[in-house]
Length: 448
Image 1 (cartoon, rainbow, N blue to C red):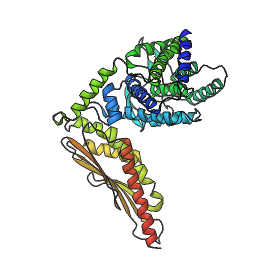
Image 2: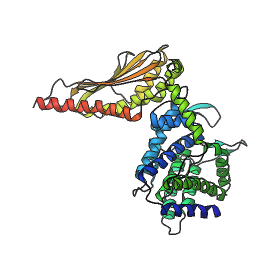
Image 3: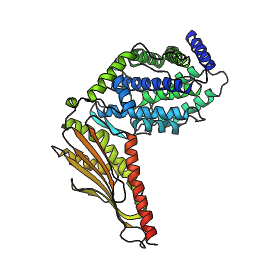
Image 4: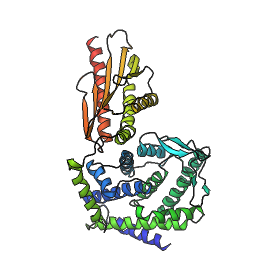
């Protein structure tokens, strides 16, 4: 194919310009990363605009009126890309474990989505992160026919076959990396191994393969969605060449951008200025206090499902690491008057969900993890309490982390529509766990 020859020529030209200036390369890769995050998520129905995506990734500014779920999709996708960019230059081998880890980074937490039973009745399906599907995920085509992906029973074997095929093909001396990456993308989609996120994972894996061979990522643009799906449908009919040509065409565009950047030329595209204007508008609106979102049942429900319940799950996971040092433990909420002596993430969250549904105007609630009765009887009265407290005001919400020892308090206050970053939450949880560890160390040393 002529288009393949053109891409190879562009790659050769790019190689002559290497190594790139560090600042120029960082600027180019930032553009690719922003474009990749926006387009790959938007293809799957994410509502954030390019400007909103850029504002979220670069400045932590959230889009008012947009679902929190959409913000988490973008931040999860960005974390997955950053991970890929960190390891792509090493000797990382593409394995099933690698793919499952990528899926976990992308989706972060297990969740539920609306679905239909085989009889067409509405139901809720649990989306497990990092695990292959447990239910069929076939789709109905525009003609009303069912298009069948691999069954849950077939999926592990088919994924094993895919990885073995890739390893064998990659070792061939005359392999074309573009064809290899494109076919891998298609074969992965035909299996559809996960309950959700298959398209995003497929595009990340395709770009991981391309970048391992020294190519930039190929960006499938959301405005070209129909063409992308059209060539995928042709591949379903055993016509793979149009799909390979389509991927190569998009890759050539990325190569041209990277070559311009390597030469010190402008890497912006004609529509980038319009995107910058949207970003400016977004930032100005975020600073306008008259435009703040106010507390309402819908935004509280979204905040609970997309931020607070997953955070409580992580809080329980962090606190439970210290269970080994105590005979008894209990999770409870003073405000909601519920408690668990055998807490698990799922039963705590489901009970909280039921209790909070009864609250017509939620103002606050707490979650406490208590450790009692130190396992070594030589040390008495070693009890520890870790606490999360949530408050909901007219325009803001707050999350407070606190342990019963040392300087373990962290508090975040945000406007509705703004999110605490995953990294900030991790640091706050880690601070509580480390304070608890220090508490044990200092008290056991004092009593020796």
